[in-house]
Figure 1 (tube, rainbow, N blue to C red):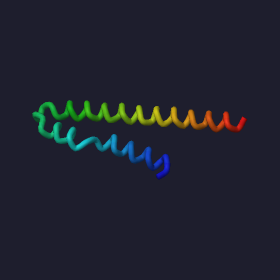
Figure 2: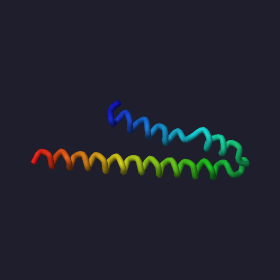
Figure 3: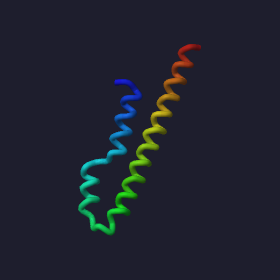
Figure 4: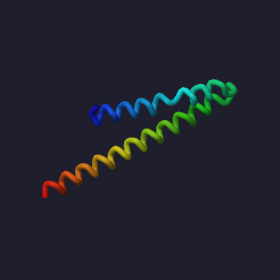
Length: 71
């Protein structure tokens, strides 16, 4: 599996959320559901930003290693 395929799979998983959290939101009182959905979306976006940041750091490390090996 390629790096981009792994990244896309991880991003899709983050954005889809878990069945447990979706079930918890569905079981909450109707007046609290919009707040819980918004909170869950913010957490998913934070995880996605973390995934992107970690991926960029790993790519930078690989590029530095390649450059060092070429010297």
